[in-house]
Length: 214
Image 1 (cartoon, rainbow, N blue to C red):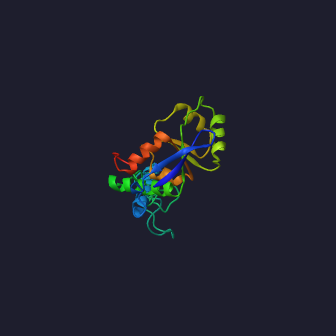
Image 2 (cartoon, one colour):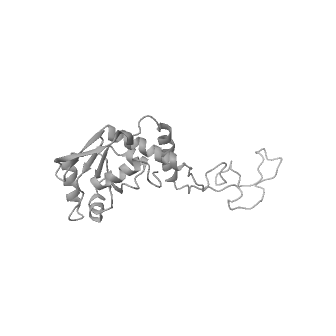
Image 3 (cartoon, one colour):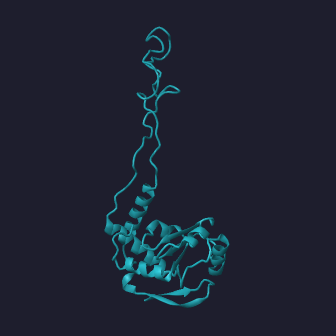
């Protein structure tokens, strides 16, 4: 059984949180993690890059010069890709980069990454995560109390408006609901902080009782 320390807002240890070993997945899921992260990042691409083909460039079909007798290379129209200002050969066009990932694969990927974080002690649990005001100073004080200096992911059972407002001006800090966090977010941040109620939601996801765990 893995035991994670529970801290208060001042960084003092106030107890332990137990995660049963049979919930952790450490012996499989490596390929699932790769496939899921690739799919998540691909879905973030806008896919709006666009160039004009030779048939879409404005211009007439008039031949620039006669076919023979000039000593110059043959040319049929100025929209040709070999001309400056002409169309683009094999250029990008709007498309979707989305990739399909089966639900069970996404669930396995999430379990594998979260299990590794838990087993390595990379998850910190807060007894509660409540701020009286949405001030950046209050959140910075919390980070200092927890000894967090790098990128951090804060997960909660329910998003608190003051926490979001206080964290939004701090670079490399993200606040999400535990039930909707994805594999890429877990891998992206070196420090993961979860409030106690949010950790209960993560245990449910480890048990595979969620609808989707992408």
